Image (cartoon, rainbow, N blue to C red; front, side, top):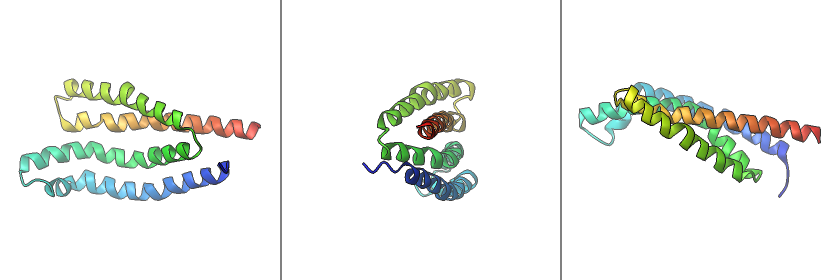
Length: 143
């Protein structure tokens, strides 16, 4: 293990910046023209409309996952895989599943509302990643 945390941190920031550009493109395409994407898989207008409704929530996650996925790669790269597992489990069981169930009832079964569970989960996971990154950076500078 090279233990080059500065290099890993630079790679993290570069990865986030580059992937955010693609995330914005995918957000715009998916949110505003998700019917084109869904239309690739079905000619049924009702299915396409329902898929687009879900994709609008997914589009929000396109803006967020560039942070989360880069952090996951960073933590795996510096051998903090236990944290990656914990934040993933927390996101799924503490947010994604409960929010999906709540939105199913509150949102009247709208696929957009149910789909919001994913970006909500991603937000928690990003908060955890930033908190650990900050703590890790403080501990590294104190050493």
